[in-house]
Length: 430
Image 1: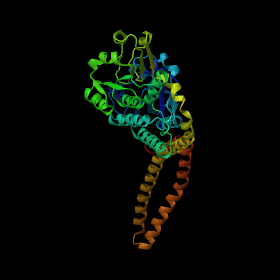
Image 2 (image 1 turned 180 degrees about the horizontal axis):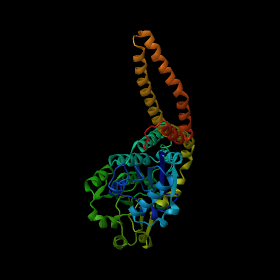
Image 3 (image 1 turned 90 degrees about the horizontal axis):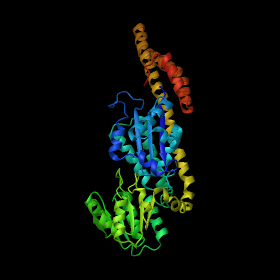
């Protein structure tokens, strides 16, 4: 049967952050969603025997395997709607849908940093790797997506080691720091509150420290993790319970948690502003889902920016990265070709192996009969008969083997393998 790779996704170019945050999946959400995939799962037989979900601040992409592209895509869209409790009509126009070579190329470009808001960003390769490892741990993947993701990750590693694409990259949190400096000018004497001590918060905090802020306060749900980051920056750590006090001290607030709900509310910001009415507050929310209620933007003296507002800053640093893009695209093309050769040939290879095994079994059976009939044939005569049988089988199978492989690499191999299996009574492979 035919195997197809399908991709359903939204990203920063097709959907605004307000929609992306509704579709984004937390760690626990991913665990629940991945049970939908796999040869055997809680839902019984499935159209989607393999699946991997990539959920980041800028994208949600679901990769799956299906015998039928259309039915598989419909199943993924329906599942996404149910899982995220978002009606299909509210996100259908923002989706991109790709299959087979187009899906493979897209994932490989993602892993190489070519599809990011920040071209060449270093975080995306780790996110692709983590998405694959998570799916693997939950038994959601299989031979096709295992090979695809390993191939894409290999391409991403090559892009970083063989080109300078990441050396010139500006990460999203670094772009947030640049935006702060661009809007506020010199940052000397400014107090920064970083909410969230994960990778995004850590990079943003270090980028702001390098720009000369006077002090950094870190608020994190895990106090120990927040304290570790604060010590790296000679800053201060506070618990989530003391956010309000820290907010009142802050000139700049960076929010970067993976919380599924709003953390910075209008009420908290109004209370903070009341304690320092003359000092403006600058908030950059780089989380998806957003940490900050959009209504905060209407509070006098507060300027609120989200991840989509970073585009202009990112675009200003494109020149150096763009010089590396053709070299990375060449790596993408090479790795996609390698994978597609394997992918297209896999059905033909299985059929060829079964075809040859059947021929070998028949040859052995008929040789035994012939040698018994010869009775006292000499060793030399027996060897001549064996050689004849061996050569006949090889010559008869040679041309069909070559043609099956050729059709496989041309994309229509499944049509010929199905015919061969039918004609020679081979077991049909699921």
